Length: 195
Image 1 (tube, helix red, strand yellow):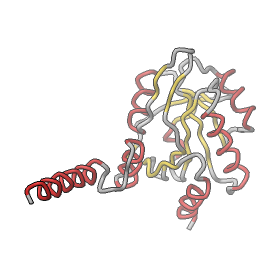
Image 2 (cartoon, one colour):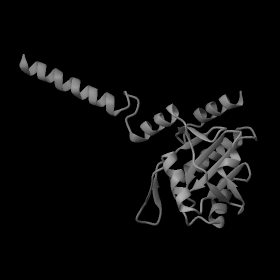
Image 3 (spheres, helix red, strand yellow):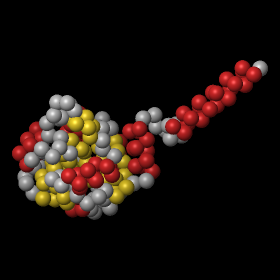
């Protein structure tokens, strides 16, 4: 009888720990927990000024008044950034002309030429779709931190980073993060703003 009670107690403690550690069963990874947190409590992004693929300076605040879709990339990324760029290409081809996209490079080496190369590769044309970099390291790090973007230099001169399509509302608040494959989910979220 004691063994049965001990098993039940251990199982209950394990279940409670799993429930607490997975945000009430809703998130089994830290990335999922981050996305749930953003959806539950949208966050204002810090001010940032970018240089885009044409050399034009633009501020994040310039996008206020309409929703914006953002991705965080680096121009020479050999894999996941290609997936992100492809997702933006699909969105750009199917969303109304007023939809705006911003690909933000976190690589300080991405100058106007590199940004232009990435833009050309994916058909990004300013002002609708800007590919931009942030020269100021402190501003870049503040934006990455607030958006929850993790960037780790690898041993080959590139980066390992988390990924997503970030929805910024008309007030400049990050409201949701979608998987690059979840084009329909992002499109549905943007439709809410259209009505």
